[in-house]
Image (cartoon, rainbow over all chains, first blue to last red; front, side, top):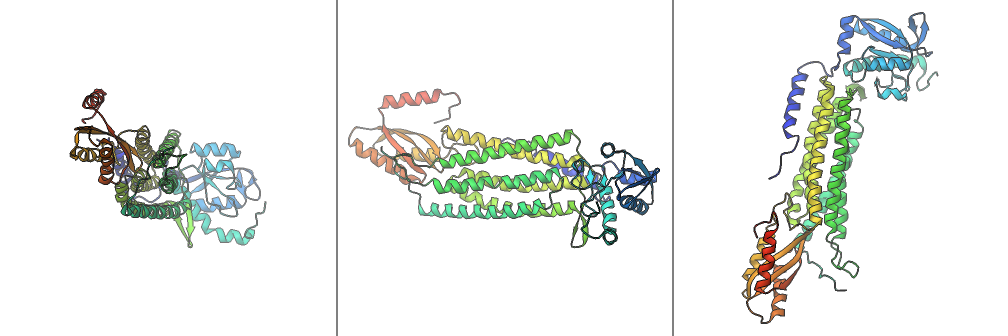
Length: 164
Length: 331
C-alpha cells in the first residue's frame, strides 16, 4: 500500500481555478487592477523625486526626460498625471501599498529596492521606471510605451552614454 | 584475511548496466540544455524557480549512479574483504537525502512568500524585434522541459528492475515527476497572467511538497536497507521474491530435511546465510559446498550466501524466536 501523494488532489483544483480566472481577458492582468483603476480615475498617480536630467522640479510640475516619458505614457492611456513629490523611500513604500502607479526618480536597475517593486526593463542604459509589484498589465503597457520611444531617446542622449 | 569470492555478474547484466550508464549520460546532457533554457527565462516566478532548481538537483541521482557503478564491481581485497557492493546503497541514500532537503527548503520558501503576500512581477522581453510577455517564454521553456525526462524516465524503469538498482529507479521516478513539475509551473505562470498573484507560490509549494515526499519515502527505504532489512522490491517495501525462490532451491536438495535463509540486500546483490537441517551427517562438507553453488546458480544476484548446518532442534529454536518478533512476516 503506497499512501497517496499529498498534493495530487490539489493539482486539478489549482488548474480549474486558474482557467476560471483567466477566461478570455487580456493577458497578463493586474492582481490589484492598477491599470483599469487609473483609467477609471482618469489619472496616473506618479511619485517623483528630483534627479536631473531625469526629473526636474518646477513648482508642483515635473520636467525632464522621465517626466516626459511618463506624460506621454499617460497621454497614450488617455489620462492625466498627478505628480507626488517625495523621497525614493516614501515612493517605494507607497508603491508596495498601491497608493502610487508609477515612480520616476532616475533609478537604475541596480537600485536595491528595484527587487521589492516592479521595475521596468531598462528604457535607456540602465535607467528604469517602477510600478507596484506584480501589476503586470500596467508593467507590460509601460514597457511597450518605453520601447516605442527608445530610438527617439537614443538619438537625443547618444546611445550607451549615460548623461549622469 | 579471507576475502569474499567476487560476485560474477553475467554478461547480459553487464550489457544492461552499460545501457543504464548511457541513459544517465543522456539524462545529464538533456538536463543541462533544459537548465540553460530555463535560466534565461527565469524572471521572478517562484514556481519557475522551483522547477529550475528541481532540474538542477535531478542531476544529483545520475551523478551518484555513475560514480557508484564505477566502484561497486571492484574485487574484494584485504582492506575491503566484502568488496564494495554496498556503495550502491550509499548512492541511493545520497540521492534520497538530496530530494528531501531541497524539497523541504523550497516548500518553506514558497510558504513564506505566500505568507508575505509577495506579488511576482513579470515584464516583457524583446525577441527578434517583438515585445513578448516573458511569461510566454517561460511557458515555452517549461514545455521543452517536459518531453526528454519523461521519455528517459520511462526507459530507465526496465534496467532498474533487472539490476535491482534503487538509485536508478528513484531517478526514473524523479524524471517522470518532472512533467508534473513543469505543468504546475506553467499553471503558476498562467495564474500570474490571470492576475492571481498567489497561484505561482501555491504551484511552487505543491511541487516542493511532492519532491520532499519522494525524498522522505526514499530516505526511509535507503536507511532501512543500510540497517540490513530483508531484501525488498525495487519500489515499495514488499518482500523480494528471491527469498522464496532460494528457499525452494534448498528444499529441493535431496539430503535436506528443512531449510531457511537470512538475507540482506547489498545493492544489486543479496548476501546472507542458508541454514539447512541435513537428513544425516554423511559427506557434510561436500554437501554444504554443493548447496552454496546451487544457490549461486539459481540467481545471478546471489553473491555470498554461506550454508550453515543445524540440528533439527537448533533450527526449530531459531525459527520460533523469529516468529516471536513483533510484526514478523510469514516465513
